Image (cartoon, rainbow, N blue to C red; front, side):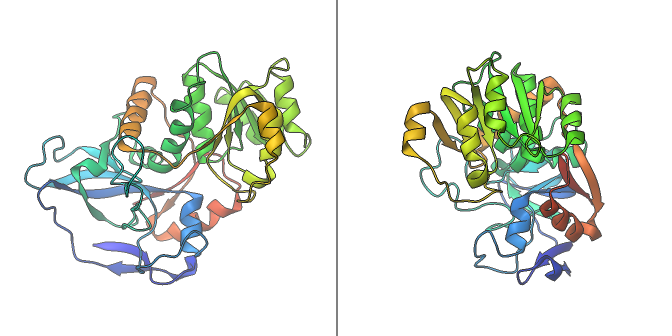
Length: 335
């Protein structure tokens, strides 16, 4: 089979290789990949910025979708022809990850989705709703589940809640779509008025341009009649967290899902006490959450926003473009 792999760090080092066709063993399924999607994490891994990869070469990309083309013995819930996505954490099936459930992730410790075929334990893949294309299904394992976890695991989330979403990348747009389907009021920030207009077309109730309104935290709070937002989907980290505290209501939740603006939090304890805010770190999610998300997506006929689709041969371009930040939604690769 054909695959793209990194034998050393650097997207320019991505190379096409031919590997043996894998075969499923007992309890496993063979998936023929049809599409993949790119996350900023994939760029960081490829450039050696995320974490040291002990066992190079590695096949990149955590997110993909395909079709089951063969099954091993004792496979009970899947059959040939089923359309599936792999789990981001193939060992994290349910509950809190208190052991080694998060020690293996797809596209880093385990081979990623830039390959024609992959063998997975039956428990490590989840069915894709019928209304989604392969490219659309490939968008959910990391970005979709991260947004879902930020919302669905938040005890304050309700149809009367106000959610502040930072930016218009993959996770942020999923958070907008999920929150609106849950009945929440959604505020979106961006440096682009054009992107804010697109966000409103998707259902965003308010948009704030953080370039023209650098004090966007108080601006968001003002939109709630001074009460403050219930949840912030926080992707920036160092550069955005101070404004998120200005936006949050007392006792609200700030879901930390990224650090595009810096990983160190210069946090004032006084600020935390005064807001009574809850800081909630989000690390994608488990199989139970993935299945719940897919059921919600199916029931609400949610389709991800795809900014651009690339060919398999142009996967490196997609990985470079994710770092440029010009996208609205997801970047996908069609096999």
